[in-house]
Length: 394
Image: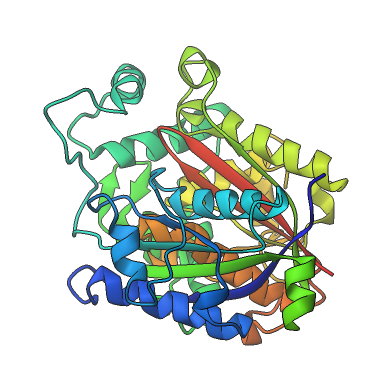
């Protein structure tokens, strides 16, 4: 029988631009020590660790944790593209839920390079070859960087079907900046207006400006999860429980639908969210706060619909009506999201976790969503993996 899993410690370091960061072992150890301090335990009580990163050599997870302690525990390295951090959390939760361990660390870090993401190994088939082929066929524009074509193409499909305005994506980016202004660990904390987003350098005419895309950053974040008996034995805070969690990968619809929204994981996210709602016995209308994968403003808009926060086709109205922010239906990305924090791939999912745990504890200061009881996390990686997690204030 599956046992309850509690998040008893979270920690992250402020994300930085590439080149301004410490080496990855230091970033990772600082985040881990912050999570241990938050939990109120020593590293010697951790029984397993799942460590996520995308750009790094094998066993970098061990190298990072050797800075914290060398206790001989199993350390599993995780690489699942942009959903790497939440995949580490998924595995850590699974270990505790199954009874295989009582206290487990999930850690994510990334040392990014400036500019658009690219392949490291060019002498073998790319994991993205199917994605690239369908994107070339559906959107062309091969002079535009691939990630922009993926998510901009998805946004363009929404614009073409529902008449969504480019200014709606600008509204999402402006909202992110307002939220980030209250987040001391956000990289970009300056409030920007919809008009300033629209006036930024154009990346794809009629579809995207530079401010609608998240920047690459470096950073680390961590979470400690444990069983009820472990928390009780050590007197730990059991106020936040993982109520439900699901992870999905692509189905045939991702390519066969010939829809860029499916290429970037709409159904993958929809399926994971539905599994979580079913397991938790709640619906999207019950959620108080969401951290979702806004690598581009376009993906935030599409994710509203995939997660059921609004009807399919209703995302523009959801944004225009202010239902995605304080005073609306559900506060999305109170941290400022990837658009304001940046996106160090391995750390992103655990930074989302950190924000939501703080929200449910009531310790999010000026970002606090009043009375937050249920929190939803959505972390997407193309290639593909989507992790959706429901947290509950106990």
